[in-house]
Image (cartoon, rainbow over all chains, first blue to last red; front, side, top):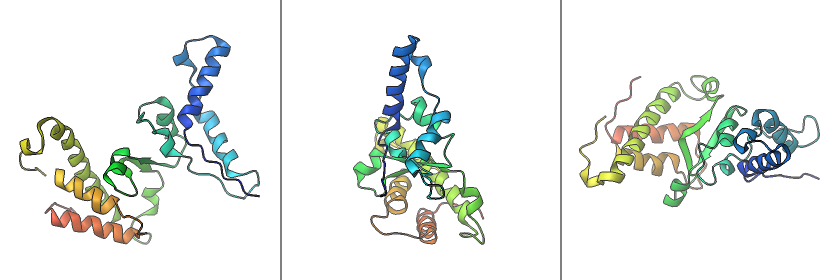
Length: 159
Length: 42
């Protein structure tokens, strides 16, 4: 029988461990965050199944980490060190009706650089992706200004 | 650039239920860059 386990929010799980740890040891709560780089892979491997060669979970529920926009919480932040990539889902994009609502700026893949280019995807892959990223990042940056002065108050776009 | 960001989200990130290939996604991105007269250094 195959069992699929989905961890909906690793952050909640880690916060719960911290509370238990704090209660047991009586130390300052900020100092008792679990060491995700130690137990995180174990959680992911257990979720992958008990049979050798049956596959591994290579990407746990990244969306759950950011469920309450806690991008700077130490747990989702540390998750980046133990994964080969992370896909960050955006509530804002979802609310705009964009599917899949992937926030490409904080998302990353450590395998991408070796998996793209001539003979793999396309010669211009890296260059095109870099330019799209750059222009989109500029646009996103300008949105913060837009939220203050409004789009009518913005001058012509600069490249 | 604000309009570019809006269009990028709508047309490149967003693909609905269609399963696009990498090539199709790159083409969509290049088309957007071209439409906004942005520069791509090769």
